[in-house]
Length: 123
Image (cartoon, rainbow, N blue to C red; front, side):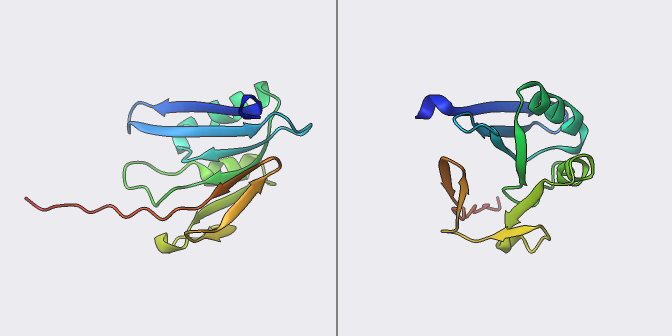
């Protein structure tokens, strides 16, 4: 089953940001989710999605990003059917606001939202 899950790690050099593309290749529509898209690489990501014959369902942000501008708005403007996803804890707006423990199904695969706590120590 794992062989039917596409996983691509993409990189945006200026902000040192990783974006992840996941898709269910076992389904005829090849539904996909793009995690942490960057505005400057939205066209690159959409081109890759088109070349792979995927149907982008969600553009998900793991958190509010201080290091770059999210590409979710750009992607939604170019692909109006795409839904945005973000954590409720971020207090940001999105089509779907998720909390720890929520589950989303991408046809064959399910992902579970996990709330991560990052502690920063002051020197």
